[in-house]
Length: 393
Image (tube, rainbow, N blue to C red):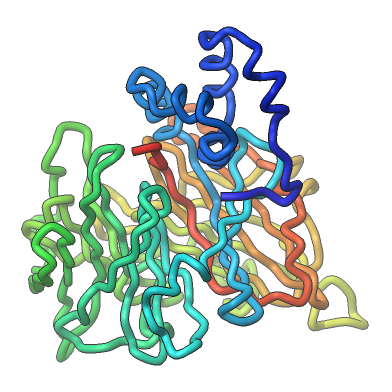
């Protein structure tokens, strides 16, 4: 991993410090900086390889949330960029060299999602998904699903989930939901068995969500279909048992009310049983192609799975900080440990802008995390995802 400034600490000066002090200094860095330090000197590598350091580093890193953006011109220029609120700059992760052992016919890849140390990319030509472990630097082709090869346009962000084990685990499950002959089906790939399983979801007749397989663990939500008033969602436990179909509907309050705005002026961003509604309006009479975000609300699936429940609206003071004109916009959303994180990516006349918002369900507070310029003018956006749980091992 690298960063835009391509800077490294003064190795000679650091080597003169006591190892205990270097240990504390290294722990204050984010994971890409620590991985980079391993290449600087043997003494640095020795400290980072120490099991006590690995344990402390993993404990800190596993709770850190990253935003990953994949941008490209051609395959040889494909770069994965990463940012976290613990730092003030983007880090560059070269992908091209890592993927060289696998022949993709000089094709560009699309970044699907990430979780822990695993990152999934999709190939449009051969219709395959590729799993990349950025810490062990290994690449693995996932065999085609029971539905056969799928192009990048077939994958819907809110209909997929990558589930990894405990920090440092080399196992994962890739889940996605799809209609098969008008039947809702959950497909799961298990990296340990290297096999796909499929289970037809049942209607939610009892009016309650499935319970998690572990204490405090809620269901996994995969969106099958999203309409202006109703969604079709599959809810499953982490062990993928007994998936059920939910059909949450909006009750007409808030920005969803037809009296507030036309449906074309709203962007819905779905993920993990939540939806963020982004309301926009024209920036001026002269330029109707530009829009400005005028309101943002967060909604969640109700306990009986039959309604979208209103949660909160971004305060006006915060809206003033993020109001910018845009031409097109997309987003991603995830929930982890009671915190809902959402990213809105917009383009205005070739310039990209990224907004990172978080909502803490316990404190009921919104947070705006300023994201530095990712220098994306002239590049193509080829995927965006949040991820948590990056570790050294």
